[in-house]
Length: 388
Image 1: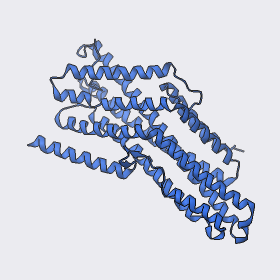
Image 2 (image 1 turned 90 degrees about the horizontal axis):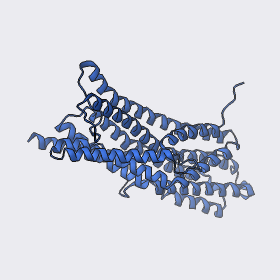
Image 3 (image 1 turned 180 degrees about the horizontal axis):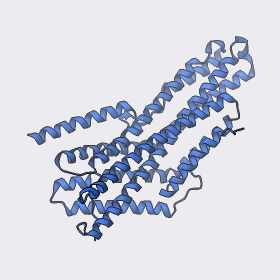
Image 4 (image 1 turned 30 degrees about the vertical axis):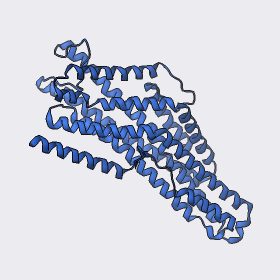
């Protein structure tokens, strides 16, 4: 007989794999025992070296405005890395507490029946699907950035650079300089992709737990409605307890989403702003000069923009589902006092905690489409100006 893995075990397997990746980057903030370590210092050193090399190269070519813009295309990604790393380190204790809370909820509710276990499985699988989709995107983009330069060099011997920054003290025109800088660029791309993936998963993993709260709440409402099929059951103490439990669960959900908003507000805003800037600048570079990696980098920035916006839409959908489930409660079989409790939940659900971009627009696909439309307008204006 094949043993079926418990929902909490599935969750821990996901967290363990993610934690291992975080340790490599020195940002294992979901571990309650996390502290500043050697790998954390290495990540900070890497980001510092990247910015120094990029700014050094831009300064060296300050007379060539077009090439200087090419070099600065990727600096937005570096600045984003600094903000994400700073956020993870600043809120490490809160992130560790949130992980503990999620594990506790999985352990608690998997013992309360088949329906709850199914809800937990669905929640965990939703998180897994999101992580797999994001990881596939990053692997594909690493492939498209790294493979073409080596392929071209293998076919016709023409040297292509992966990134555009130079390293002080190395001459890229020499064999040793080219091999060393290309190696550094390759490590840079892989490290950048892993870092982006890791910090994105921080946001996506915790935001995707909205599924956990919604799915469990659906089961609670279903069981509650079955228990109050007859109006006389409203006087049973268990009914009052179940209604109070649903109110506490909804309050916990609102508190959880509020915490997520407080933590991720700045990195989400910075990510959207910097990716928009990088996409616009890269489009200008594509129009005015040549950089083999421009199209792949454009794809990387687009993925960074849309990943968060898609997740924001899913959180909005969870808020709507919560509200819909509250409406599904059989309030007409309850006492007036119990109906007021349902009314309180309805009132709370009308003002959900939505993650915003600079407090201007919600984090959603519709916002991403508006930003894309704005980028397209700027792109067409640049084309028109260059044609004239």
